Each structure stands twice: as structure tokens, then as C-alpha cells.
Amino acid sequence: MPYEPPTHTVERSLRATTGAKVIAGVDEVGRGAWAGPVTVCAAVTGLRRPPEGLTDSKLLTIRRRESLAEELLKWVTSHALGHASPEEIDDLGMTAALRLAAVRALEALPVRPDAVILDGKHDYLGSPWPVRTVIKGDQSCVAVAAASVIAKVQRDKMMAELGVDHADFGFAANAGYPSPVHKAALAERGPTPYHRLSWAYLDALPQWRHLKKARNWADGSVPEIEGQLGFDF
Image (tube, rainbow, N blue to C red):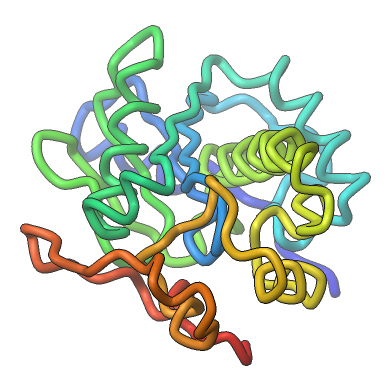
């Protein structure tokens, strides 16, 4: 389906209303996976014309996404990735883990941003970062779209590498999400060291249920529903 290309509208608005000069677009990937980290990319693009075809990574074919990511790595002013591990997700809950990954990405940028455009309607980042949330920002905002593509491609590569020693799980193809191959391997072999052990899929696996971690996060947060669906997802 045709789609409208992203623009610099939000960046221009932030510059005009807040005086921000360095603005980072932030997007995450891996929130709903059963295995692997949640990954956040922070990208600073300025107001230059983006590469042709830039949009939300989910709207792109694998080949186009990978090709576009190569272009973006040379085109963006700066970018950085932050990760929160499966253990941190289990220990902290998804909201706090997302914030941890986002802060790691933002603090790894060579220049601290004056403002952040965060994809979605929930500000999981919070103070002291000046945040503007934008629903579907990965489609409408250039910097967020760039972060979306870079984050997706880099995490996919990471999951493929993690899957080398766990070929039955198909991480190179499913990136830790619950595909049929992933589910079958999980039922037969149990979770790998890269699985999130506080999540609901273990409830449907009696032989592995004893490995499930209790949810006792101090902040009372719980992972979003997309990551807590049952084994029949």
C-alpha cells in the first residue's frame, strides 16, 4: 500500500517552541519478542532530506530494510543503540527496561539531545529528558523512522548471531518472536539463556514451568500485553 513519507514537521515545531537544536528520534524493537533484548535506537538527523523510501521498518521488505539501514548509517548525523537484556526485562518489567535501553542509547550519542521524539503515546522515558510523544512517529517523523529501521536491522543481526548455537529456534528468521518453529523448539528443548523467563508462554509448558520467574517488580509495572500473550498466539 502507498504511504506518506515522513517529514520534519515535529522537529521544526520543537525547534520553534522550545529552542531545541539537537533533536533525537527514538524507537524500540523487540518489545513483544519471547527471547532476546529489547533494543532502542536514538537517531539525530537534522533537517536534511532523507533517503528515498524511508518509513516505519515494519512496512519494508527485509531486503529494502537492510539496504536502507546501510544508507541511513552514513546519512544520519549520529545514532546510538541501547539494549536491555532478558534478565533486566525479567527483573525490572518492560516499562523500566525500555527506559533503561533508551537512556543507554541517548547517553551514547556524541552530543546530548535538547529534545526527544518518542514513538507511541506513552512516555516511558520521562524526566529529565524533554519528550514529545508521537503516535506512529515511525511513519511520520524522519528521525523516528530512521531510528526504527536502524534498530530493527541491528537487533535482527544480533538475534541471528545469538541463534547460531540454538538453530532449532530459528532466531535468524523470527528474531525471538513466537513463530511456529520457535514454539516447537521451546516445547521440546525449553528456554535458551536468551529467553524472558517471567513471561506467560511458560504457563503453557508444564515441563518447563518451574523455570518461570515470579513477577515482583518494585515499580509495579507489567509488560505490555503484546509480550504476555499465551502460547497459542
